[in-house]
Image 1 (tube, rainbow, N blue to C red):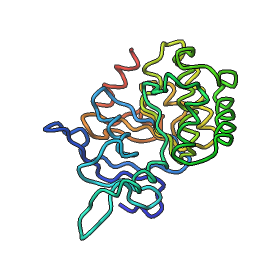
Image 2 (image 1 turned 60 degrees about the vertical axis):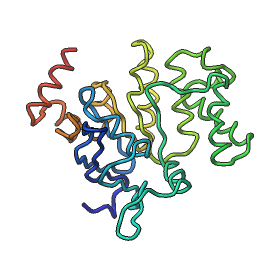
Image 3 (image 1 turned 45 degrees about the horizontal axis):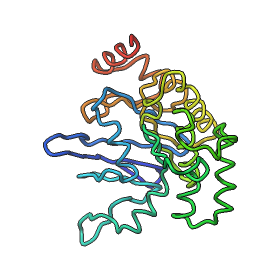
Image 4 (image 1 turned 90 degrees about the horizontal axis):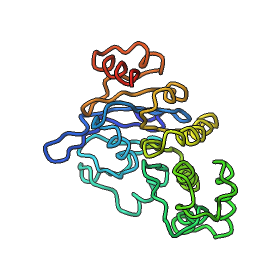
Length: 258
């Protein structure tokens, strides 16, 4: 598989936990500026796949390439070995991660949560980081909440702060791991709206989601996983309306009834 012209490419990724094989040789190519939604039943490997991209999970075999460069590993003496910690940290800056839980520091305001990594990791001044954080809070519709602490915000507002925090590092790829699953139903829409706006702006995103209507609306590509493998992949209309495999047909029939 050629990686020279690819933006982000996963090649035959395998990952096991003991005797359980979570990923069974998964390959996926993501174009710059595209939105890829990954769907499938619980335990199918969706989140594990996402976490291999930014090296939160090591891989047993295969490779991840970003703009043609293998990340997380380097070939030395004919063998692949993990990159040094400093290089790994540099490579992970290409990716911004938004988790199911918000993972905000409870003792920091919304602004300070967003400013923390740019100051400590990127080394920018607090004044520059604050200006960036204020701009990003406005971008996610929370300009007035900068001095609020997480416990003073709704779940949807906390997740929007988490999105702003990811954006503050200037990543080239945004990774979302079920970003609405921890939210009450009435708060889901405000988070999805922010992600829709990012899609319109041309952000490259991989989104693990169970929101099928949302996936249909924003995705360029929908990937359905089951038992550690990709069973369907294509445009939303093809995958959701005309799935080729019996497993996919069963899954989409079940979720549409839910």
